[in-house]
Image (cartoon, rainbow, N blue to C red):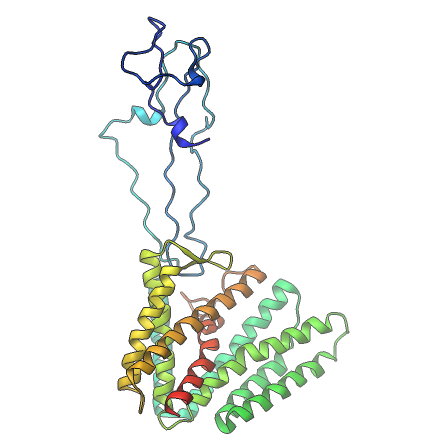
Amino acid sequence: MNDSSWGAPPHAGYWGPSDGGPVQGAAPAGPAYDAHHAQQTRPMPIVPDVPAHGGDQDDDRGAARPGGPSFHDEMPQAQPYGAMPQKPDSMHMSDDTPQPAPQKKSAGRDLGAAIGVGVGLGAVIIASLFVVKAAFVGVIAVAVVVGLWELTSRLQERKGIKAPLVPLALGGAAMVVSGYVRGPEGAWVAMALTALAVLVWRMTEPPEGYLKDVTAGVFAAFYVPFLATFVAMMLTADDGARRVMTFLLLTVVSDTGAYAIGWRFGKHKLAPRISPGKTREGLLGAVTFAMVAGALLMEYVIDDGTWWQGLLLGLAVAVSATLGDLGESMIKRDLGIKDMGTLLPGHGGIMDRLDSLLPTAPVVWLLFVAFVG
């Protein structure tokens, strides 16, 4: 049943009760309006759709609620032949009746808290990155341990999977340090030893669930500390601090571009079953912002870098950051949670901030090696 049949004006095909004939000038009646069987029905009120949440966030709070008539008498009631059609309640409203204000788009999070936490984290990163490089390696290790704690806690709470945290935390911190000291070889060796430690540690408990626990443990070791190790390896270059800063800025700019453009112009969903808030317009904003920022940073910040390399770097960051965000959204959808934690007001948990950074780190490291050595 469509709106056009229910919303037709009362005079269309209406037979007047006084003379039994059609009103002069009216359109001919259709088959549904034969002279002795016609029934006048009330037009169905048209309820405007609530605009969908346009922010490029993984947030269902701004999604449109299911539409439908908001009146108790949803089905129109038939009236005796010859009776004047009643007008819907909305027809009695005068021009002076105040109309409800249109709903505004919601940002989907506490922007004040998010900005404050972001500024605080930025200050810590800059202070450790440009004062003592080793201090920044410690910041990476702490973030890795907290991220592992959040991930393993959610796995146990929602799925009953007991990935052993102790060997993961110790091995993850060792992985970051090994990558900084010994490069890729050190990172791979630490990764292998961490996986072995997970297998052995889990043997101290009953065998039920052993396979799923150690599988989740090895996945967590690769997903969090191993990918984070590439940030530590960036730091070993002569201009390592500027490389890490470029990596962080490009990821933040990509996320900001996706959020700003998606919130303002987003209409076409990117992956509605994974992350309902993300839009194709938001992805275009991420690519545009990151490419422009990449060209500027590679030209003026990175030694021997050129603007065209920055365009490619920005494009790669936008794509990998978006895929990383979608990947963690898949994990959260499977676990049935909104955020991985509550440690960072306005952001969620540490893992909710690392989701874009982790898969982007090896991509940026590899492109830096290819472009400037």
